[in-house]
Length: 254
Ligand SMILES: Nc1ncnc2c1ncn2[C@@H]1O[C@H](COP(=O)(O)OP(=O)(O)OP(=O)(O)O)[C@@H](O)[C@H]1O
Ligand SMILES: [Mg+2]
Image 1 (cartoon, rainbow, N blue to C red):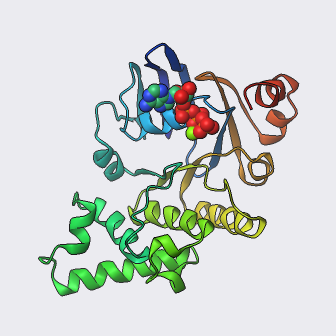
Image 2 (image 1 turned 180 degrees about the vertical axis):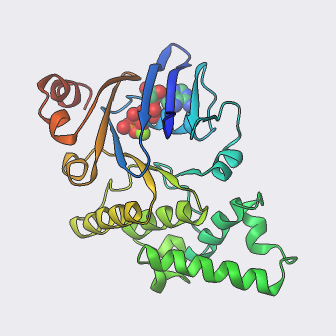
């Protein structure tokens, strides 16, 4: 049986640096898989390759048994995979609601800003999308902040908005790049609860995360990446208890 998501033989070199080095893994549908590893291990690069933002030098990505090789980011979103960015990439001078509307537009192959400013949507279509955006904001707990400019949102709220944006694409596999980093304890709890709720809704999640406690709380499975290579795959308990991995993680660059 084909894997839900399968990454095979990925290599990616940036000048003299081998960012991905024969990376291979599979993930299962319906699970929360955490991708961990020291700074510079290649985690974001893997997200960039899976979502079509970077072309690997060699290797393949397949989703539900079908190749994604050569697909554009937009085609990949339409196939059902959406991602957040480590540096958020929100439209800070737009409202939370318009940021979600821009992501809804991605489903229709429209440019994000055109979706907000374009006059040719019928009033009915615009109303439908606005209702969908509001429902998505409600789902992540931001309904009361819908009309607020992003630059006025707290960092925790901005992180939730990033998740709202991936949900708004309608994707079934969500790739979240450090959704919990930089959050206060309360905001961290909110995000963990939300991720579990998304799983109950039927989403599959691949989550880059540095916080070991978060990984232990949410991960059904953990992938440990080091120097672009998958060193280990297993439960959070097994990964955390492995002294060799701990040495790489804490004794290395960080
Ligand atoms: N576009 C790029 N050009 C040159 N080097 C890059 C580029 N993108 C990533 N790298 C390098 O590739 C390596 C892997 O980077 P990547 O961002 O994937 O790491 P990461 O595991 O996400 O790290 P972090 O935990 O710090 O986010 C790093 O050494 C990084 O400097
Ligand atoms: Mg990264």
